[in-house]
Image (cartoon, rainbow, N blue to C red):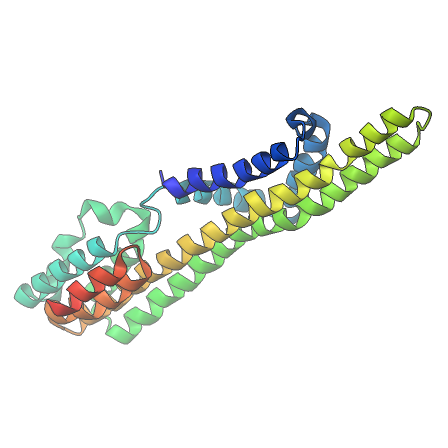
Amino acid sequence: MDISVILGLVVAFGSLILGYTLEHGVLSSLFLLSPFIIVFGGTVGAVVLSSKLTDITSAMKSLLHSFSNKSSGDPTLVITKMITMADTCRQGGLLKLQELLNDSDLKNEDYLILKEGMILALDMKNSDEIQYALESDIRTYTAQKQMEIAVFTSAAGFSPTLGVIGTVMGLIQVLSNMTDAAALTASIGVAFVATLYGVVLANLVYLPFASRLKGVLKRQQIIKEMMTEGICMIARGEASRNIENKLSVYYQVFPHGAKKYKEGIEK
C-alpha cells in the first residue's frame, strides 16, 4: 500500500484534533452521530442521484486500486517488453509477434492496448492506422476514468451544502426550545458540527481522493502512450536501441524518473 495514503490521513486529521485540543476543546463534542448521518448520508444520496451506479462502483474500485504502489504502471516493464518485441521482429519479421501474444502480462487489463496494437501490426496495418486506433482507445479510457473522478468531485461539492443543511436543521430544533439558556448555548455548538463535517469531508477526503485519481489517470495515460508509440515504432521497423531512447523520455513523470531518464538516453 502507498504509505502516502496513511501518512496524509494521519497528518490531516491529526492536525485538526491536535489544534482543537490545544485550545482546550472537548473531543467528545466533535463526534456526534446525527450530524454525520445527515452529511454523509445526504452526500451519498446526492451522488447516487447524479451518477450511475456502475460509475460509482467503478470509482470505488479505482480508488482502492490507487492505494497500491503499482496503480500507475511500470514504465521500465513497458520499455523492456518493447525492446524484446523489437529485437524479435528485427530477427524474424512482424509475424513473430504472434509468438509473444501468449505473454501472461498481456492478460492484464493495463496491457490490453498493447495487445491490440500487436494484433493490428500482425494484420499489417501501418503505423498511422495503429496510432489512430490506439489513441481512440486512450480517449475512451480517459473519458470513463473522468466520470469516475467526477463521483468524488461531486461529493466534494455536495458535502459542505449538506453540512449547512444539517446546521440549519439543528438550529431549527434549538430555536424551538429556548427555555434553558445553558442548554441553548450547547445545542448551538452541536448544530454547527454538521457544517464542520461537511467541510472536513469535502476537503480532507473527497477532493484529495479525486486529485489522487487524477494523478493515477495521468500516469496511466502516459503508460498507454508509451505502448502506442512503441508498437508504432516496431511496425516501422525501428531498432530497439532507438525505441528505448525515445521511450525513456516518459520516465520523467514517474517517481525517480529523472535518474532513469538519464540512464535510458545514455545507453
